[in-house]
Image 1 (spheres, rainbow, N blue to C red):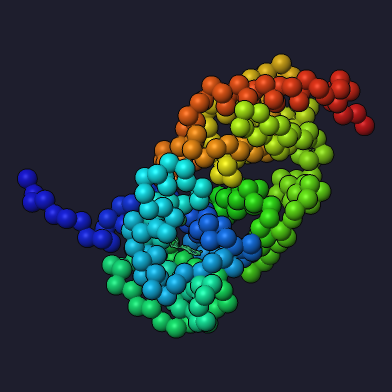
Image 2 (image 1 turned 90 degrees about the horizontal axis):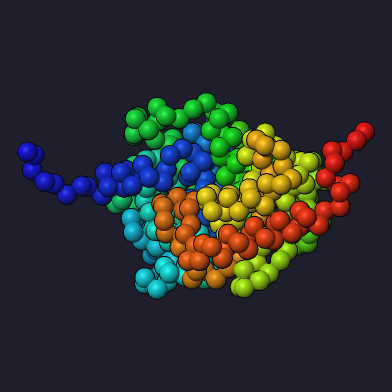
Length: 343
Ligand code: ADP
Ligand code: MG
């Protein structure tokens, strides 16, 4: 048997990176979530070669203090929670303090930031090495820019799993789409290889929210959707559900957010499927963009590192609420709306 050794910080981070950093899209998810947690209202995302060459995200959030810069890249360093009680009712998208440490251990990372109170900007660099970071003066307005180059340059086994530029970009675009659907009050500009993909302005009213939906999901969805907005027993459900006639052969237009976080959840999927059961043909999938809001203390988001899963304290209540409300909205549709469109 070999001797037991303590892992070096770099190796520990690279192992942790295996959990959260699967591909460029995962980097974009973590960085954008950080920007949103920092209160940013404008996000500029510039991508090169599907994110494999370069991911650059600039925000106008709170920024990071000079003294905190090296810590930001360290493992288990977070400004978002300090106690278990905080974790029980966490409202930020992040809290594990692992993303930047993980990402910087498998890429060339450049972080430039000016914090709210500061008069100057500072920059740290990490190149897949142990985090002996140097802080240098830089020029940047309030907020943060993070540039991630050459993802997996030092982990060839990971790099091998990357697909074509197009595939990686598609995954990445899906991540941006979900976040753009989660925060209408934030502007999102996305560019790929110097070409602008879209520039979504912050919006505050229904009409413009629906324009954003049309840009991201196609105008067909919004033309064939019913609005939902109901509240009961401390739960609020709002958003859009597709008419039964606008079903899909795949479950590829289904977005469900719990307290602003996109989730894929069996209980939710089941409740929606049941609600549509009588009005959808077998094998067809409903379309929806739905937002569930509830007391953060009644839902556990610390189930998986990517936080795509949640656990509801009262799953039965949530299931029945979703089922009954969606079922009712569908039942109220006049019959002429459920027959296939003519002409
Ligand atoms: P977590 O988000 O779980 O706290 P991260 O590794 O993603 O962990 O980030 C570490 C810390 O760095 C955050 O807690 C936050 O204080 C700071 N940080 C990261 N990105 C930004 C940003 N864009 N703006 C302001 N602060 C940031
Ligand atoms: Mg984070």
